[in-house]
Every structure is written in structure tokens, then in C-alpha cells.
Amino acid sequence: MSLLALGINHKTAPVALRERVTFSPETLNLAIESLLQQPLVQAGVVLSTCNRTELYLSVEQREDLREQLIHWLCDYHQLSAEEVRKSLYWHQDNEAVSHLMRVASGLDSLVLGEPQILGQVKKAFSESQHGQSLSPELERLFQKSFSVAKRVRTETDIGASAVSVAFAACTLARQIFESLSQVNVLLVGAGETIELVARHLREHRVRHMMIANRTRERAQTLAAEVGAEVITLPEIEERLADADIIISSTASPLPIIGKGMVERALKARRNQPMLFVDIAVPRDIEPEVGKLSNAYLYSVDDLHSIIQSNLAQRQAAAVQAEHIVEQESANFMAWLRAQGAVETIRDYRAQADQVRSEMEARALAAIKQGADVESVIHELAHRLTNRLIHAPTKSLQQAASSGDAERLQLLRDSLGLDHN
Image 1: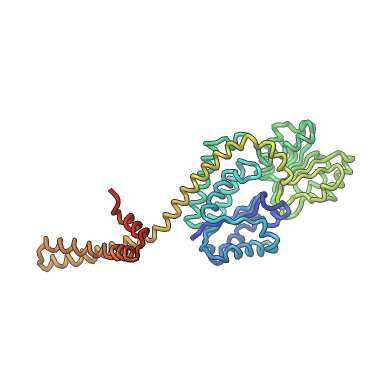
Image 2: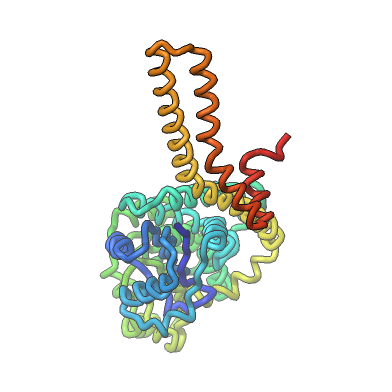
């Protein structure tokens, strides 16, 4: 059994490719079912966010397994392997363990130390747990990664400053509009990222906030918290002209705001500038919008440069966090290797118990037939000793006769011959 991590993220691929390999919440269970039908795949977890799509797997190792999994991923999303292969990374065993711990701790995020990823990893784990697609090893790995992430948060300052994609979006808005108290904002979506954006904007006392979402109920809960107006997605067309800033993050497979819609809004606004921040993957706003005069469009990748200026204070904490991950991944791998001995130990104990039972039954039968008890006990001890040391003695003789000093020493250690 081997642990694998296969994925693509913001470091290896642009948003245009990442959005084509995402798994939507509606199709995730079907994707996991399909993945588990692949030969050699015993268990799996699929993590799919705007910045990464990753497969965490428990597998039987084979040389062609990597290509098999790449082709499954590409076939599922109707992409060519050549198109995706150069952007994929592959981690095995210790590297896979360390990678997941780094991801859960926010060390591999677009924004170093951002806390949202832990919730996303937990959700991916829960989805796979619900679908019973976890092995004991994979389940323990994820649980261990959660505790590592908690330890990193507790023992370092990795999350001391409010830096996130949501925070970066608000920072961008403040750079373009000197005072947010004079602007109207339209938020599209009501998920975790939009919640964070809304709270940031409330702190800056924006003049008016609208929240558009597929379901009004979820939007109303957030709107009540931040003092916003709720509209439906179809109402965006008629209300878009009212917004100076539009920040969008939904799970829609198709763009919600198109070039034509923005052109009409700009005309109604007499070309007053509009800022569009598209945090979604796949994108919610057609890229062509960025070509319009007075329409300023930024994707999640564009936020990267803004984020860089906020990372300096987290670098020292990240070094400390990396040490924690290194230590914890080594501990996990030691546990995992120990699991490989469990079956052998079970077989060895069963063999010893069988020998004991046979010798015990023979001794009891002899006593019942009137044999001297002391003699029976001596014979039992002698026979039991001979049976138990027969195989180790044979191995010691073979190692000695072949001149295999390393194996001989290993056998001596396993038999406790050099221990005080």
C-alpha cells in the first residue's frame, strides 16, 4: 500500500487551466465513485478549490499507475494528457504526507497561512467519508493533518495578520477607490470567501452593499449580518449599473456576468469606472470584460501581486511551521511503516499460539493417562522451546554460512540477543 497525492494548483497552472479541472460540488460524489473504480485505487479524497485540484489516494503501487491516474483525470474533464501533464505534480508516501500537512496548514496557499483552506480540506475529507471512500491509513492521515494545522496556528504567528484572497480583493478596491464609504458594492455568491469580503467591506463602511445569490435564504443570512440588500442572480442585469465594485465568487460552471451586460451598465453609468474582481474558478465574469474602457477586471491570479506585499511578516512563522510539518510527517510515516508489521506480528503470534496449544494438549493428555506431572512439564518446556526456536535457528545458520553479517546482526537484534 502506498499513499499518493496528484494535483494541479496556482503555482503550476494558470486559472484558465485550473478552472477546467475543477470538480463541482454536484459532481464530486460521482467523481469519487469513478476514481475508486480505477485499478489499484483502494481509497481516495478529492480536494477541489479555486486554487487547486488534488487527489489523495491509497493505492497498490505499480509502474504505470501515474499515467493511469493522469489519463483518468484528463478523460473525466475531456482534456488531453499533453495539455495537463506539465502542470501536474506527483507526491508519494512521505512527500504526499508532508504536502497534505502543508496544504492544511496554509503553507501551500496563494496567501501564505490563509485559514480557509483548512475548512476546505475538512469538507473534502467529510465528503469522502460520507461516500465511504477512505482507508484507515488515509483517514488517519487527514485527521493528523487537521491536528498539525491546529498546532501550526497555535505555536506560530502564521495567521497573525488578516491576509487572504478576500482581504486582497478589498485591498485592491481601496487602491482604486480612495474611500470605500462613497461606493456601492455588488457581491455575487454567498460562500465563505464572499462572507469574508462582506465583513471586510462592512469594516470600511461602504455606502451600500448588494448580495446576489442563487438562493435568497443563504444570502439573507449574510445580508442580515453585514447590512446588505439581497437580490437574485437574474436581477444582476438591471442592478449592475448601480455598482461601482463587483466581487464575484460562485460555483457556477458558466460566466454569470458577460461583456454585453457590462457594456449596457457602463452606458447607463455614463462610463463611470467599474471594478470587477473575479475570485471564482471557473470564472464568473467573461475575460472580455477587461477589454472594455472604464471596466477594470482582475482575476484571482491578478491578486497575487497585491498579496505579496502582505507576506513578509509571515515568512519567519512559515519557517517554524515547516519544522512542525517535517516533524509530524516523520512521526506519521513511522506509524505507517509500523502498520506494515501488524500482519506479520499477527501471523507470528498465531503460529506461536498454535504451537503452544498443540504442546499443551499433548501434556494434558499425558497427565490424564497417569504420566508423572513433573516429567510432563519438563518435556513440555523442552519441546516448546525447540519448536519456537527452530525457524530462527535455521535463519541464523543460513546467515552465518553465507557470510551475511548484516542479516546476522539483524536477526540478533530481532531476537534480543544483544540487549541488556
